[in-house]
Length: 121
Image (cartoon, rainbow, N blue to C red; front, side):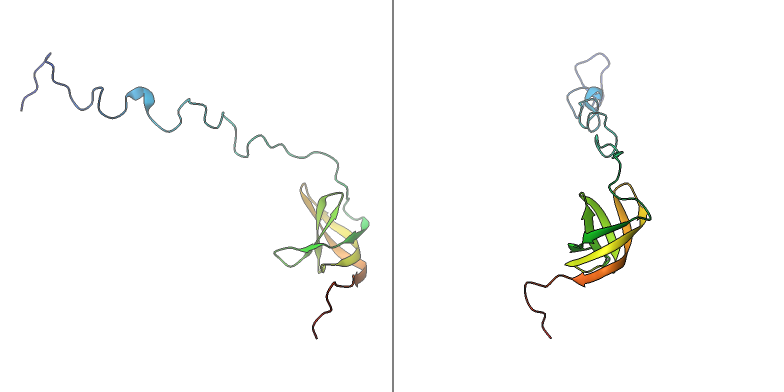
């Protein structure tokens, strides 16, 4: 089969088959993502933290982290307490502060609150 010059025959690379060069790729300039960087419009929290490294605080440990440390909060700010137990009211000392959380050690008052159910012995 021969192709004629100037005839009505069309090659597969011309319009009609597949996408034209204007519609190539995913998204293009269609506005998906709006040119945002990874992480969306989230900004770093630069407010002052409610705890300071080296200071002591009285807290109640309400949860246990995946690593087994207790989790307490001061004004909503998360503090990981090494060796802390759920229900424990303790005096802690902040050992390291970060942008999103702090770590602390128990320095006193390690008495657990009475549990709702008696512990099985």
